[in-house]
Length: 568
Picture 1: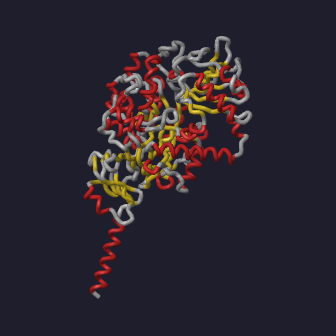
Picture 2: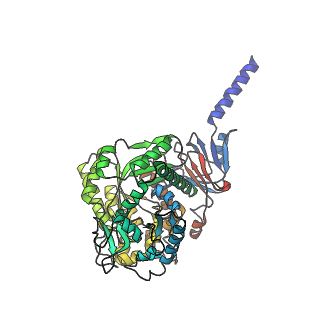
Picture 3: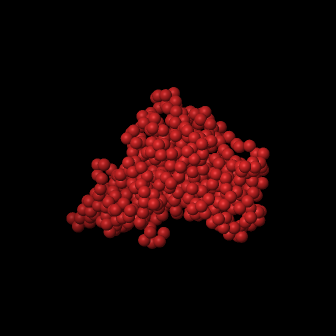
């Protein structure tokens, strides 16, 4: 009897130990938690997709059971999973399916890329590319208007295939004559509201379409796409999603905050989330006209579908364009184009109606605003909505980009509790032409003023706006702490973030900006086990070594979703 009791006790103890055993343990490394109560640790345990414990080697070692996966970090650094604070999720995948124009340093290089694509294309097939930026070309095109080429140069290599090349910012396109023909654009075509068809001295379209003018040609492309089978279109979307997930995971991203997608895209992702087919988490903003939002918002408010893999709780609007193609809406004219103050793309009155819908249906409002006029108008809309609904607290509405702000408006971010969802990499990428567009006084006063915003009490997020920039958080982290340009100069160094501020902007701040800080953004017991493991300690290594750091593991919900050591 005594032997039987001893055996039963042994089985009970063994069962209790197995129940307490971790599914995954990270050990022998540096754990940067972003939890002020426990800033660093040596090891971490995961159970059931959540963090079970964070502490010393000795404290975590008893949680290793016979079925526990143990990753020896060999001194590497683990941080909370990077959260991409503003990107275009399917756009990341779609970018990989078209021509990559980001590295082109002359217009002739782009024409040559188009020529090669045409040689492999079917008759009438659209040639799509993205990433060009005229300010990054070593020399302007031989024949140009405002530094932009004429479409005749593309017509020579693609007379029968329509060509649509999106600017790096996503706020302008360049098309060839065939695309203009299909869209019915001629010298007589008037500019649409919020857009401009750039024309030469004779009044003929050059091929450059700013802001809403891009939609004129987009409709022609949509008609072409509509003739394809639904199965083909779905297959292409699924391919873009897979490519976007693969790319993001390889860069250490565990959550992607998508800056505006359609109801149709949400439907696809929700189905994938519920089938547990998403390998990373996605938080989405809806992009649709007010009349569609009004009848669909309640049905599309999704919180944590598929075990916290998909959330839809925000609306995206855009009040202006981008600085590069001179579409940002400014309070005073451009320094290098005195006849223009940029473009107002969405009517502020219409955005105010969106604000009311957001209040009524429990959504965040996120407004793209780059220029100082755009930021002021957006803050005015937010402030009016807040005053009209004083009972609604902690709304966490966001200004997406907040790149160029009047000194008078900087304190309003903190005062109103408005989040500045910014992108560190935009600062160093755009800096070479910021002075040209704004002049020194406006640039110093309000261009990428991270420290001024934080001192106002504002939460500043971080991201890449991918595919505008590479989706790499490490590149944006480096830009945030260094503000160093390719020529070695530093763009207004007083606004640099500390490394702690930069990492917080990419983890806890982004989680807070999405109402997800209770479950993400720091490594502490009970939170989701979303972890990024880096080859180097980006918090202590020499600054210029940060870009050489590799993502070694990306862990989502306690499962290794990317493993550089295994080549996947």
